[in-house]
Length: 213
Image (cartoon, rainbow, N blue to C red; front, side, top):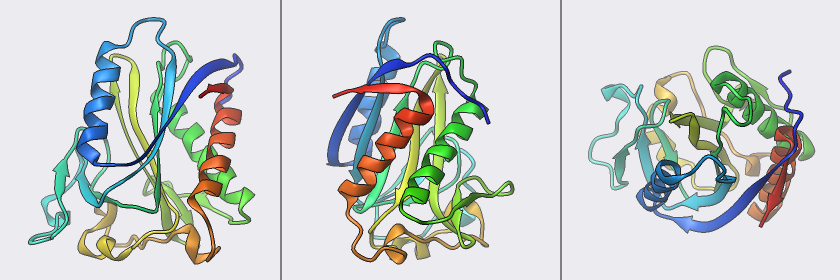
């Protein structure tokens, strides 16, 4: 397992529920204007209902006549759904300064989610054929990243306690064999605040960050 050894400060920001494009615009502005010594940031939020189309999305995966907005994005991955009750974690990191390559970043994010679910007594795994985190063969967390000038953007979406029906309108991640699940299926009374706290704890531990609120 890849490990980071130098502990660094990171700014933690919580945005509540936001429109997807508003967040992406802020993320682009931050990344394009950050300097050599700009502190890394991690953003925690939920999105209003939206389908986001990644760079590898096939047309067959995109719904027609949906009442939910469909937005094309420059992140990696295929189409997915975001909505209230899904924990978003965006990682705005200077990869070179953190001695990280993209594959290492993905490994650490996977470990963060698996550790978080383990703390909730949920066993999860990766799938070599289809990126993400899975529980009993069903996908519970999706990843989508972009690298700009050596800095990461976007991040992960962990299904917690949401309306899952919009996933039925799409081919999640472009794979017809994928079925989606969420933490509420295993812990009916789960609260977003609990998941957020555990996720941040594991993220900081695994990445060796000390958060600054």
